[in-house]
Image 1 (spheres, one colour):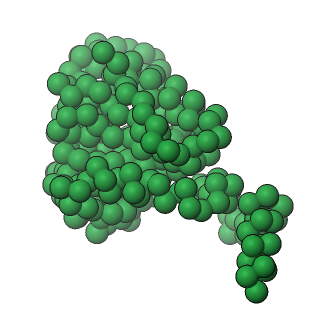
Image 2 (tube, rainbow, N blue to C red; image 1 turned 180 degrees about the vertical axis):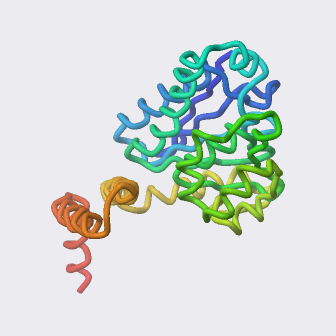
Length: 252
């Protein structure tokens, strides 16, 4: 049985973590499969968005017991190599061209919460639970910190990362970690509806917007303004923009 199920519905590609008996815990095989699937999606010009979800009752519970055992027995160099593999996955989500959406139901904990946080957008069922409990076992939600700090305030990041508590989908939405919370009963339909929004807007404009948004993280103010000007000019030259302007002028 595959650890990752891949399914297309129109322009939406769904990647389903398929270890329900392990609460979709991350191991090296699943991380590798996710990276391969994201790269394949990035190369597919027919796609407009990617959804990452979990099979069974939970989104993802973080690292599995076998992985934790390996961590405890590995050298610093071995742990660093393993950590960089997960970091590569999180960075890849931001680096692929099209939006990546986390569809969270059940629990998203530790690395699972990190996976959701690293996505461009998060839609959650009302009963979903989030949390970074790593500190309870002397561990640190380190790889996700760069993403978490960019999603919520500094003080909220400190609280979440150092107190280890779980919190509701409603609270996650309130602090900016989740975009939308929807009913458990309509969750599946709402996820596809949300992802399919990208069928109705310009693909090239979304690609340029995503790149510009994340590029500005490392730029000063003046540099960010200049990057915006260049992105603006690039968008003007796209076929989507030329067709969109022509269509707008025809209406006038």
